[in-house]
Length: 226
Ligand code: B16
Ligand code: MG
Image 1 (cartoon, rainbow, N blue to C red):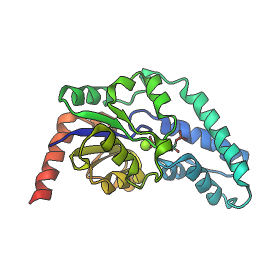
Image 2 (cartoon, rainbow, N blue to C red):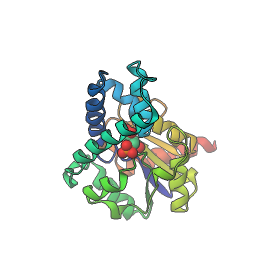
Image 3 (cartoon, helix red, strand yellow):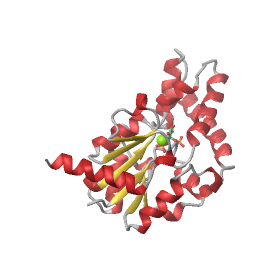
Image 4 (cartoon, helix red, strand yellow):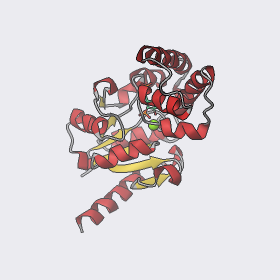
């Protein structure tokens, strides 16, 4: 029996993934590292410090900065990111998401949020949809980040549901791995190239239809019983 939908935030509910990219790009430019939108794919779903380390490694500058300097860089990136997200409104909710949230509620299924972002609560507030969520997992309290299952298991626990009865939705490869490891049904939004391990894949959020996802989830459950 389906008990909950658990959402990723950046790239699923709203396109903050692009703002993360702009903020990292600005920082990388300042220290002479050239990153592009393709490289940014590898930063999706992973934490702020892990992202910074990946960028430094990519630019062969991993050992050039002290921990203190790296903390300052991450803080600068976040300040710029926050200035960008402070401008978002309900118009920035991705297509299909509002309807999906409403349909989930109408069908008495719970809704959780499992974002790696420490800015998640602020983003939801700006989008005006905080009240749709029955539980928001706190990324700062999560020891192992995506691709580990912890943040999805945290939501299942907070919602009081069995992970096996949950559907997780993600746009990042690390996130799909996290959902699969949590023993949930994974729905990927984006390219096959990045999300081949998803149980169900759609190209864009506008294809995230409640009835369609539910029917694919039910088929998956039947297949796993046989
Ligand atoms: P912050 P998600 C993730 O959010 C982003 O995809 C990732 O790019 C970002 O580094 C991470 O949040 C941490 O975000 O710096 O705001 O704490 O996709 O898991 O919702
Ligand atoms: Mg994401």
